[in-house]
Length: 171
Image (cartoon, rainbow, N blue to C red; front, side, top):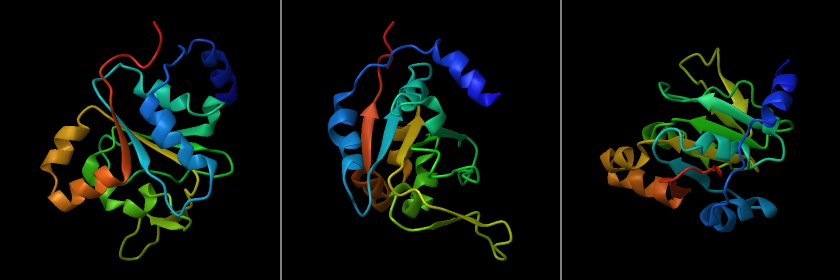
């Protein structure tokens, strides 16, 4: 049913614009081997097509896994399969959450433990090496300014930032 809905709604999607920063700084990272990659941050007001743009990074919308991070301390990636998904959209991820999961957001060639606890009875591992990681937000810069300098510096050095002011789709 999901695949059918993807096919049906694909026809309704608007064509997205190209972004030089994404084409020149973000996407080229995936054309060759790297120890770790930068993640993409699309920051701007609601309804400008940040999620739609993220889905356009892959040939097929079904290759993007979207996880709602608006109220979570840790993204839910239990459904992530690197053989299926080429991109993960962390919708409304907080800057502080990203800092807490540096290994995940660097996309290193290693397994990353998720949902860890004292007993680790619900923990699981993910491997995101070579996967495009995209954060969408409408208050990233404000959150960045509120963080300790070392954390804010890490985020700046390990991300490709795009301030979205106009729709990312063609009218």
